[in-house]
Image (cartoon, rainbow, N blue to C red; front, side, top):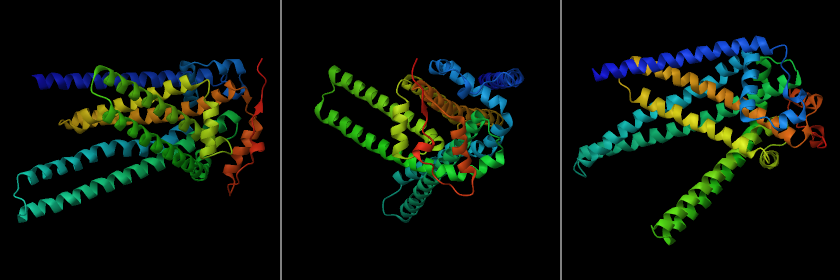
Length: 374
């Protein structure tokens, strides 16, 4: 009886989720017809309107762009975001299977006499399983990195082309992506080094706390403060990196220069950028936990398939919306600092990517015109 009740509850949750998904899909399809003729790209709007665009307005702009250019974003999703989502979720399932085997053999090893033939066989098998596990983890990180950079390149280039009024096609996007993602890789490596150094320093600080501070009320309170400071710093670096990824595509800067430029741009919009980052990371964690509990650990095949599809679709939507919002935030930051983006200059910059060879533009070629504050 209890099991049946749980099954009915799961089915109701799934049907409600599907209902809301199709309901909002229909609403956005209707909004596509409504906004198509009246839609005004970000770069054609008044500076005051963009400078004070709220969190809700940012997401509204992202949904409008995606819905008005459904075809191109659907193609990008199928080609790049779908494999990325599949790799992410499949990694959770496969890691659980591999780790379960490792735990089983470790338990068997504990109950086997040391030095016996059986002990040696189990130890060899365990060593091989750990090797496979870490090789799988390495391959997973590599594929996630590649598809993440490719997806970022495609979405940022597409949105910039839409805003400049350039003709855009899926074939053109895919021809540009391999040339753009190399710049993103350099920016990612710079961010990786910064994050690595930040974590090492933070680890040393926490170790120093364990060596000096006693587990008193004051000591625990100080530890909580340290942890909050660490989280704030981590979010700050992550927000800068995400914005730097857009800078790497739309300007002639990449690597550490893009990070410096991003740090300057995000000033005044850090609260917005941080809120967006936390929201998406929280949603990603929720999807991951839901997949682990409702798919990986579930015994019923029907519920596993149903919830697996739901998590898969939600993850694809999250990634697409996240990359779109990330690009829009870049334009909002430019507007906040009274930097008007010249559509013809940006269009020329994008055309360079579409050429047979990539030739980096000079800084003065993509320098944004400064608009005096009124």
